[in-house]
Image (tube, rainbow, N blue to C red; front, side, top):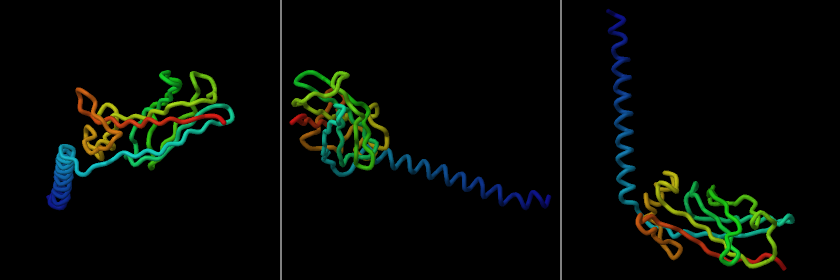
Length: 168
């Protein structure tokens, strides 16, 4: 009997702390859902990109961005209308991103003028939850000339198009 009386406060304390934890999780989930329905503030995506070719002819695109860490980018290189290289996914980490070493259709990049296209779609199929918490579930907080909306879904699409020259 004495053992039961001594254990009773411990049992009550464990159940009370569990109830508080569950209620805290519910409240956090509710606040997060409320924020996702009404994201606050606007973000104008900014990208600064450099393309460099090494001695073997491989190309790397690297840059900086104000988009949230873990944002997934699609990087493509065109020669006129021809797609010559692609890297996906390219992830932003601590405000920076770098592609893998790229080849021009499997060969070293030759001298010439190329076009770099960097894109990101902001929906739950294309970006992790951590990114959508910052920009909104369909990128509602994103604005500016590089941002458009995907027809049918309304998801934000950010795209940077930049020409660059390799060679003398």
